[in-house]
Length: 428
Figure 1: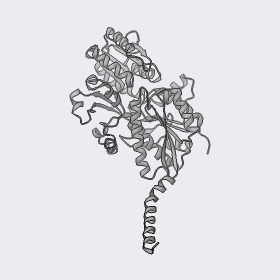
Figure 2: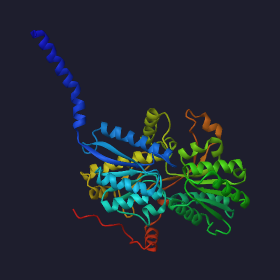
Figure 3: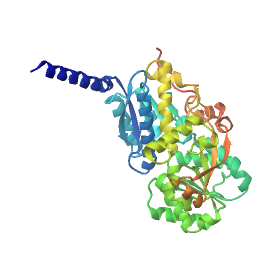
Figure 4: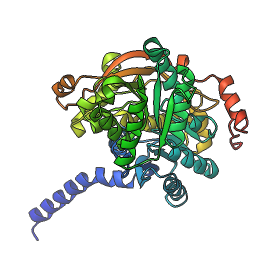
C-alpha cells in the first residue's frame, strides 16, 4: 500500500472518530431514570398524550443543556390506563425493577392517591401531575408526594365568587364522577355556593366510563329537575358525552353548565358548538402567558406548537413544570436522594410558565393563581389556525385567596384520623 493511500486512510479514520466522538460521549454519559406513569390508553388518554409530549419536550431541552447534575434524563414509561391498582403496580416496578429516582404523570386523583402511597412506602419521590381531589394533599397527603395542580377547594372557592353574583338562590343539579375527585369537588362547590341541601340541589353519581345510555338517563333526570345551574363534575370522554347530550336535549339552553376542571382536551373532545358559554376554572391554559405576558410560558407554547403543530393543554403544562422543578430541586440539593430533594422543594418559590408559585411545606400543595374561564363562541374557535381558541379568561384569583389554610387542613386531617403533619424524613 502506498504512503499516499495510507495517509488518506489515516485521515479518514481520524475524521470518522471525530464525528463519532460526540455520539460516544452521549451514549457513555450517565443517565438518571425517571418514571413516567401516565394514561397512554383509556378514558384520559388525550390528557396522557399531552403529558408525554411535554415531558419529552422538557427532557430534550434539559438533556441539551447538560442534563441534571450532568446526567441525561431517561424516561421509563408505564401505562396507568387511569386504573389505581395498575398505576400502583407500575410504581412498584418502576422503583424496584427500573430503579427510577422520581415518578410523575397521571390524570386521575384515585391514581395519584395509590401511587403516592407506594412512593411513601418505598421512599421515592412522586410529583403528582393532573389530579384535583383535595385528599391528595389533604387526608392522604404524604411527605414523598408533591401536587402541582390546583385542587377542588381552590377551584370551588374561585368559582363560587363568580357563581354567587349571578346565581344566588338558584337551583343546582350535580352530575358527579363516583370517585375521590368527584366527591371532593362536589363537597367543595356545595360548601362555597351554599347548595349543600341535597333535597333542593340534587346529585346523581356516575361510574367512570359509563355507557351512553346511563348518561342519557341522568340527563333526562336533570331536565325534569329544571335546574338553573348544571354542574358536571366529570372528566375526559364522560364529560364530552354528557355535554353533547345536554345540548341535544335542550337542557343547555335553560341551564348554565359549569365544569370544575375546564381544559383544552375536554373542550376539543366535545367540540366548539357544544362548549359555547360553558364556564369553569383552571390554573393554566395556553392563553394565560399571552394575557399576562409570561415570557417563559409563551416560549413553551411556541416550542410546543413548533414540535407538535397544536397548542399544549393543561396536562402538558403540568408535566413540563414538574420535570423542570425536579431538575432545579436536585441541583439545589446536589443529589437525587429523595429526602434531600424533598427538603429542597418544601417552601420553594418559583416562576416558570405563569406567575409565581410555591410548594407549601406542610402539605406539599402548590399555591398558585386560579382563573375563571368561559368557552368562546364557535366562530372564535374556528378562526384560530388550529381551531383551538376555546377559552376567554374572565377573572384571576390569587393562590392565597383561594387555598385552604393550615388550620383548615389540620382540621380535615384530624377528622380523618390522621396526624396534623406529614411523615418525618430519614435523618442524614
